[in-house]
Length: 434
Image (cartoon, rainbow, N blue to C red; front, side, top):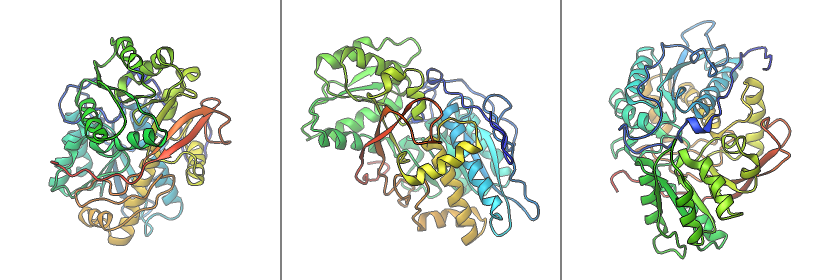
């Protein structure tokens, strides 16, 4: 663990088998895997005192009222995603405060654990509102996003999602809910098609999970690939782990001649699907589902290097990301800065800018976000929104894990790094109800 002058310590729990991907469902039901209902912790600026403990809070205001920003994220269900998101928010607060705050007022990050549970998310949201926050961000779970977004609209509270890809989080009337990283599920097949066409791949295998996120992604593949020259055969619909044997599904894709395996629609099976694809198909790219890269590599580096590919809203190869990641790794005990942390940092940056310009009224902050475009550190694209809060200019990168060495100071998990294979053209924003 590091010694730091202004911050404490945290440890990243990177157990991919224990979590489901961030974009885990299209509705706020209970059909997805993961823990059951878990009550949100008492309001605090630190997470529960276990391996997810946040750096010591240094954001208390020396004078005047603090600007409170809520972090509503899934620390006990999507721990690696949530720890990154929360700590990106904490880093932004620390840096802004070290520079004098916002008009002399310090930023305070108030954390609630939504635990991938609708009731815990609602409870955490209500606690944050009672605490006087001016905006809330950091949500990973689609279950939580779908449950909390209507409350944010009713309370007129800016609510910034990170990996909550469900269509249900936004309606045509949404004005206070914003996506910041993962686009809506119907938009997520377009970058896949663009890449396979660029590489002149004519046959891909697609496997999805038998729950809301997988079904949404399957529908996106069908509509996006329609009329293209790419054959995706029969989409394989597999149960969720822990007991799923993916062998017959991967073998079916191998028998169909797949030149690429698209596992974006089956987050909880990514690791097993990757290994089987290498064994049964060979040296083909296998796409993940917007997960922190180290979760795919660390458990099986020999398999992942050269084969695992994924999407991100951060450009891991940019100078902007490198500068931010160096500061982030010095701030925390995380071994890699994921795009969740980049998004968390961006959320606080944008809210602080809004407060500086229009004050701390949540309604005014939401209006400021809608009226402006943000060029944020570490991002692969600018951030702006449709009137209903969908990403208006999303251009996710598609990257592959390659052999190292990584740039100095950016990866402490092993001898590997990231190669950008493609960047999506701007995605057409999804219109709710279309």
